[in-house]
Amino acid sequence: MPTSKHIILAGCGNMGYAMLEAWISRGGIPPRNVHVVEPVEALRSRAAVTGANAYGNIDEIDPTLQPAIIVVAVKPQVIAAVLEAYRRFASSAVFVSLAAGVSIETLETCLGPCAAMRAMPNTPASIGQGMTVTFANPRVGTAQAQRAGELLAATGEVIAVSSEHLVDVATAISGSGPAYLFHFLECLASAGQALGLDRETALILARQTIRGAAEMAATREDDPEVLRREVTSPNGTTAAALEVLMGQNALMALMRDAAAAAYKRAVELSRAN
Ligand SMILES: NC(=O)C1=CN([C@@H]2O[C@H](COP(=O)(O)OP(=O)(O)OC[C@H]3O[C@@H](n4cnc5c(N)ncnc54)[C@H](OP(=O)(O)O)[C@@H]3O)[C@@H](O)[C@H]2O)C=CC1
Ligand SMILES: O=C(O)[C@@H]1CCC=N1
Image (cartoon, rainbow, N blue to C red; front, side, top):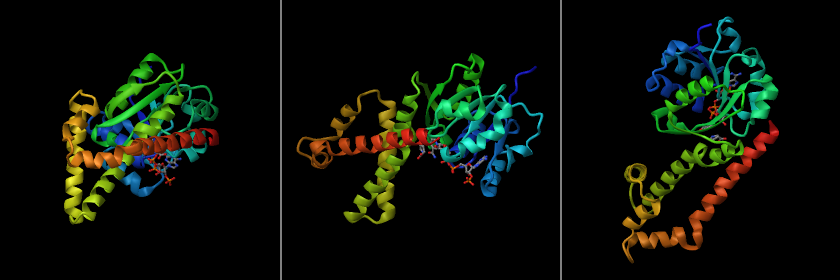
């Protein structure tokens, strides 16, 4: 039997669509090989614009279709109910679940014994700048792992971890991380407004500063501390600000608390599912 090239994407909301955009615009995946299942009409139409096949329900798919990979991008709270209809693919396809906190054990409870992976991506996947952390069960064969890895690599960097709980840790750092940065952007712009800039100018300054700093951090191999020190003149303006941010480890403690709260929630979700 020839190897199937078909991919099912179950759920095409924020994260599913970010992946779909990357697969088609950067990953060289022919849209005709992608089958999106999404009940929300507007999201289904958005997916169809990429050229992918779009269905409101898994039962609308050609019953003879044998997908190689099924990417599950529905909310953790509904995944068990959703997977029921996918059991028929459990003996042939590799399942890649993006759901935060949903364990491999839960996936296998829903699907029966199957090749199952967890992948924790983030929304910069849509522009090929994503970070995805993966963990696979032993049923995932070498060829399946390679094909799933290639699919995820179209969205940016991919790292495989050897312990499942590290996927929950990654959820708290890279999965949710873009939201922390977007909030930092909001905060920096708001500070600019408080000091007298209009909102539009404050956002331009904050956005380009974050873009430039992120690019520098990504392209230079120095420790971030080195980059920070380069900005900080002795007794200058940055030192004055960092005294507020770093005094008593203020931002460090806040960041650790925030990430710990995200991790705790991932663990709660794993118990609820
Ligand atoms: N957003 C992010 O940055 C990240 C999200 N994730 C994970 O990705 C998953 C999806 O998150 P996100 O995209 O934000 O959520 P969204 O709610 O934006 O997207 C999920 C979509 O799945 C749809 N859906 C519900 N039931 C089915 C079904 N039976 N078949 C197909 N689709 C269905 C939902 O419809 P309806 O609204 O009607 O229920 C919704 O449109 C979650 O498990 C999350 O943990 C992981 C990393 C990052
Ligand atoms: O907020 C969430 O639960 C999902 C998982 C990581 C990012 N978004």
